Image 1 (cartoon, one colour):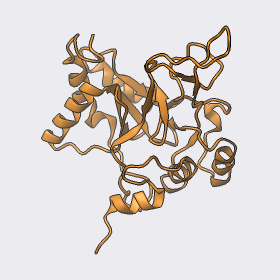
Image 2: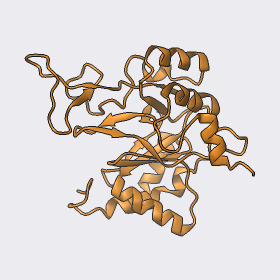
Image 3: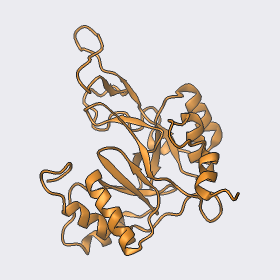
Length: 242
């Protein structure tokens, strides 16, 4: 039986269908198979009472970011020790990082050498993907948490992004652009939105590229219109709505 690209990439990345993959192998796969520049994230740690140092066990709030910031805006899902400029595709460096911290989340350095991304609330992400499918617009990998979805796209420059946005009447503030100098947590990561741990997963997993390596990515211009429309359609009562 012929092996499908999806199965082949899961095997090469060692990504099982259901269980959380071993992070060191996953990190190596992202870096060496896909050629995506990555680095370890801060990860999560047990929340502790500031006065006695005992773990806090409030409902859904028993974890905090592994970084020193008491009110981290992106708990667990941002670079920690090495800066973004240290991101790499070098197998030896990736192996060394995850030997030291085998549970570290995998963070993609977006733009430049790696994919860029556009993220939006999960409710809007569902609508946007459905509409893009209806229009026959090909999409690439999609990263999801319970709160937000991120569509990976080909690297774009600030000038290119600015031109596209200038053509639009309005852009929802709930859209976030992850270009050069940005970052995005990849599946294999556990982060938090302040209400407990949230696993990062593939809503649409990366398939094999034409050369069997990096997945194909759409240009941002082919998807931005529907992402803006889906974000603008959010009602105030919906998660992420205005």
